[in-house]
Image 1: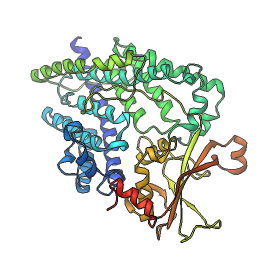
Image 2 (image 1 turned 90 degrees about the vertical axis):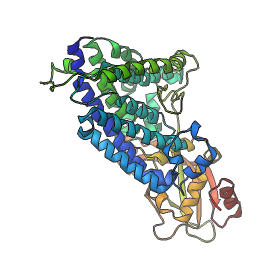
Image 3 (image 1 turned 120 degrees about the vertical axis):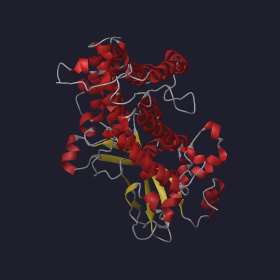
Image 4 (image 1 turned 135 degrees about the horizontal axis):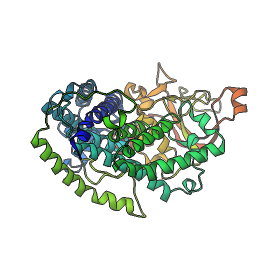
Length: 487
């Protein structure tokens, strides 16, 4: 690779750093707002209980030393400050400072993920951690970029995209008969304000969307490793494809992260045809950093062996890491599409005795559907962890999600931290005496139904999800004790 090409990576490096820095900022804001109610000392799945049961070597985290709410808050703020240093460009002024900031971001977020249990069990956590780890080796802004970390970002992008394409091709038949998008927009984890319109698009549009998906995920990724302008064109196609997903739903920061990773395919040479670019004055990269980067290539190559084997396997698994450091994992998304949308509706009442006349009032969540008249919100790239887990829980039963029992108890207690995760608390003064959860099937209203009622959804009760309980119920209290959530 000639020197001109490498110098052109100054823009690639800048775009990658700023983009990943934005996602880091979002991730630490999520931790600041949600980690304590979900995983704090009195959270739904408390970290202090986790670190007593799981050895450090299996899930290394700084919080083994200090599993307290004060630590979770402190390190969230440290992560926010460090992310702002990256976004502002301050972190990249000196090589040692850039390395230190990215290493700290990686170690802190790894600490959150490794004790985050089911609430941090999403594939994009590992994608972000990999990106932060590779960011350690990007170097300072005034040095000629090293090509190695740029190509490692492309390898990460390839695994995200091609892995997603393979899991779809081998998974749900609807990806092969081009019908997945007929129900995806309605049944995806968290629809956004435009999802209703995408759902009711002509069938040929949705079938074309599936074809675009296969092209973008199965063919385009090979272009990332080809010379310019092919690599840049492949990157632009990926960016456009991710934008189409972003405007149709709320998939946390998965698509934004993938979009930013696609910046690794763009350089000053490719963009000079449409932008007036002037490279900054740069000095030679440290020989030591060159040596470290080549060692990094060897390590990543070795760690990639199980990833490649998995992608070639007919029994491909998705969103799996092969080590506790969440490096060089295998990824994929939506290998299967749910055909029906079920939602858990949590209700409470202040009545001391349940009668046929009892009036039940519903809790409303920030992202997932509840009130049929409430328009789906735009949430992404922010990640509502409880709402996502409620989507998974609705596909099974509460016995498979032990945290749900504690969630119901927190609502009965009027726990302020847990209630902060909700959009509407129907009991702002006094907690309910009884609580229950019902399961409904949801569908988007038709255009005619929306004109007539103004509702975005229509729903049908399918049955009880969680029995009616109160804190006075001995059996309920015993379950909480058995799970370690009540003395």
